[in-house]
Length: 82
Image (cartoon, rainbow, N blue to C red):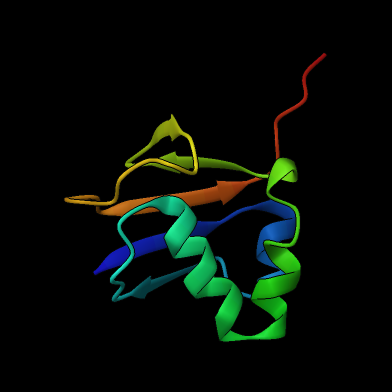
């Protein structure tokens, strides 16, 4: 089981702050493909991966990051500061 966290507009589009899922995905990108295939709201949230960042077990990662042994994946928009 992997805990998936959604933040900001990703959470708004999906309608959930978090969920636990069983996945056969080997990478974050494969997980995103699985999520997109679930429902239109997931497809909308993951339509443009350039607009998303991902953290794996609270460490920034790429979409090619492996999921073996991972407990948590978080999706969020890029942070802006000032």
